[in-house]
Image 1 (cartoon, rainbow, N blue to C red):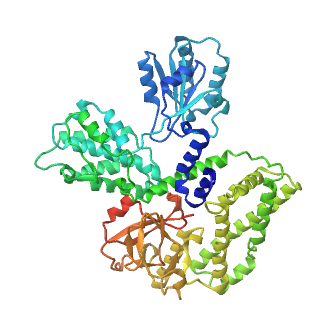
Image 2 (cartoon, rainbow, N blue to C red):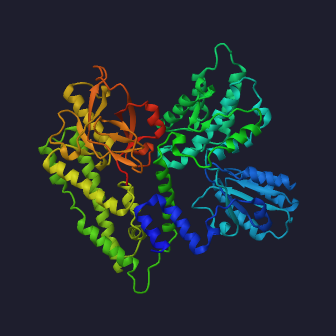
Image 3 (cartoon, helix red, strand yellow):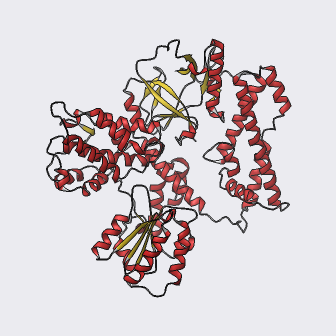
Length: 637
């Protein structure tokens, strides 16, 4: 096999190794110069630029070229005027550009994605200006935006900065911005270890972002201001310290986890993670010689900045995920996400024209796939038949009302899919005009992705094949429930609104036991059964299946959490019995130690995908699983 064929095999079998293999293929075919990392050198870029050629810096999370641009201007003895774009800033930008063109100053327009209306005017200024100073330069920074003028991009030099990768690089950057005076700002022995602790936390919270949802549910833009304000608080706290009483650790942890860094955090489970870091790392233990953030990551001792930077330089260049509290499997997740992002970009920039020659055209491929899907699509639900069946099984029960709502939504999906496929086949035949929606459907079906009009009314999935299989499986569950009665065990993933399912179940239990719905709280018990082994439905509550543990394994014998096996990212959870009890009548005895594990519909752990928490037994401290980022997912494809 040649290198490209090996790359195809690795893409099919082992997505997380796709980027290293692609790098090897590029190095062999084009030369190693195209795979070596490029360090952005503003001075070299300045040499090849011209006064009326804008230089656009694309902002990535954790990096901003503003400081480097201003430092370069200072080095060259040139005045650099900066304006942060936004509402009403166009007037100031015009004035600055007009004066700088004649005086030979630099203009830095920051966050241009917030001033898109001015970008067209800026292009006009560049095109029509004839008199200018030879030292004048245009600098722009922007986030990627679909409406940013393409003509301006084509007329400019583009560059970006990658944020420093790893704990070592992050700590070196943080200490490079400190001065010796700041290091000696307090004479107490606790000051330097706590300063290093905040710097380590600062690097950790930024590095966790690269692991995706298992790192942070939402990728927050923690920046230097968070670090500075936290250090200032700790300095003030130590300045006012009553030495006999010692440091107020609850205050320190609260300020870090809820105010300084926690002020950016909007997700409750992310807030729990941040507070856990503060709880585990910030205590009297951090002053002990034996204290380590992780094996090999100690708090160094020193008097000068040079002492600290020397010790930091001895840290590993690349960090194990365990350094952040994650399992080593998290690195596979990171590599897989990187490969998926790269391949998605490649697919998006492919030409969408019909193929010529003897190969099958895009249209004929899509026509064939559409015909296959149309033949497998389930029949429409007859509303009169549905109503009749529901009346026979007591349609006023909350779970049957829920079933009616789910069938209505499934019928809408089936109707839209059938309509789109029919119209698409007619458009390919030339009978009707190919509309924008049909063009989107054609492109996505050819790329094995879900058409936008289908995704809006249904659910997310990795590929069109998985999505269509889900459609058939979901419909089968609703059809069997409607015509054969309640299932013994429910596939939670197959519901549009799983929260509604759990609420309906709570309502039924509350009615049966004659207590208020507000008093009813969910309880759960993880059984040792698989879905096939469930012979009859639960006497109270429901059995559910289809959940996968992300970040942990499951000990079936002892029914508790354990470390996952190497290279096994998702572990299926056995059937779970979910019921409800009244909080006022006394709560059922629980195991001594449980981890409150959030359940999400899919791998993206956002509020929109959050369902409910499950209590899972554990012999380890729950903090261990919080740092691991353990969650339950309904869909892992």
